[in-house]
Image (cartoon, rainbow, N blue to C red):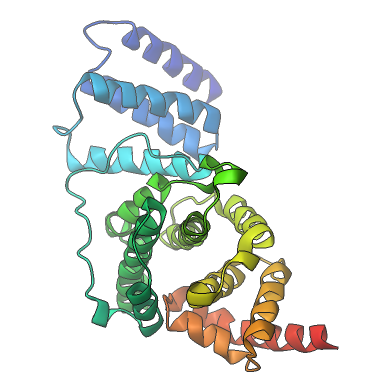
Length: 315
């Protein structure tokens, strides 16, 4: 396999050096085959080189719109597959056939999400992006909650790409907290980053349920944990429901152990607000944005964990 791959790389290099062939459909297909190999073997440095080359070809050809939908699907999978691992902005725009989901009217949103959106002011890019991200994630949750009980739903690869692709692309295109210096951190920026990370983690878990590779899960969990330790204490007040949703969701998505950082923040929030009912936090998350397939199995155990952790911390 390695010998074949080396020969293929050499052949691709020859084609890229050919003025007649360097931007052809054949070269695009050749690069896509290498991107598939890189993602399968998690060779992300090579992925970056090939994806960068494909982006250059797209610019030289003034886009790749003429290619078939199936080719665009592979390009999107390749772009998002590595971009989410690197946590970078996608190299290419969404294909034109993937339209932006229609906005849901405020009265048709879950009650806690309604209340948040009716209070916030979209007076910054970060807040505007955070609100759109939440609306996109809610759109995905509606589809999954409606259809996810059927095993056949999770075997429809194209439907999975069409559902998750636009949301993941938007989340990866958002501004990042790392783009700001300590002196320029804002509350809106913190909120947007929390929404971005939690939403990416949700999309990653759904990717895996559709049987797509999701090697980024552990990395996202680490980022969310670090964000919680560093910044969760600054969030509350009018954003309390959003914070609780993020903490509950992060806890439910946590593989194995590692919930303590979220349980600690939930305990602090309960103490600060005078809340004594361990079920209230999970109920708040359910009334915000809830994925039944991801939360149902672990919700009761998480409620018990919150109760035990809060009781133990009070001793």
